[in-house]
Image (cartoon, rainbow, N blue to C red; front, top):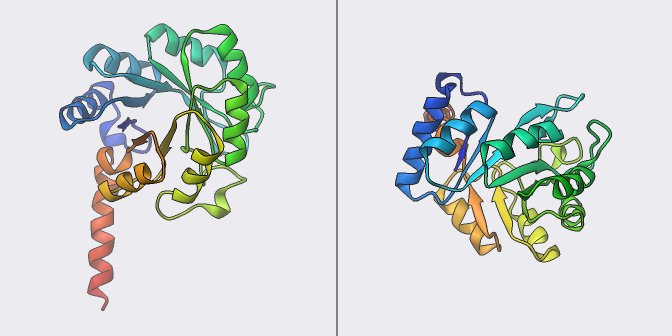
Length: 218
């Protein structure tokens, strides 16, 4: 379960995310993915599940950036996360692209690296750089892929990545229903990360509200 505050100010405190993480554990989640030093530290202390850590930021064009600086990774390793998620796209940050920072992290820290990718090419490059697993997190969220962003999960990309690499591929990105998650496994995913459909009450409410308003117009 992806347990992050993001655009969720009503649940912006570390203890709020801990409650979501505990609820996810009670519901059968096998791991937690979260962001930010204080929240990661709080979840690590409160929940006995593997923890995937990341630090969000932004590239100069305003698109999301995930764990691209060595000092960000160093903080997460000190906290004791089990896996570090790293932006594996070819975009440069502080002089290094995704594969280059993955290679540097592998040389510097003893931690499992999850490469967040947006394309099959990203996945292959991340594998060659030493990533232990891949996640389709960034599909539709990079300048290269924004025009191909799917309304739901990108199952076609998932299947293509699974066929192209020999390491675990985690499905992430717009998996909003149990049916979506089941289809991910059918397409070869090793695991599925679900976020907004669990931790964004205002977004979930808007789905129902929009559907009812649309129905009322007919």
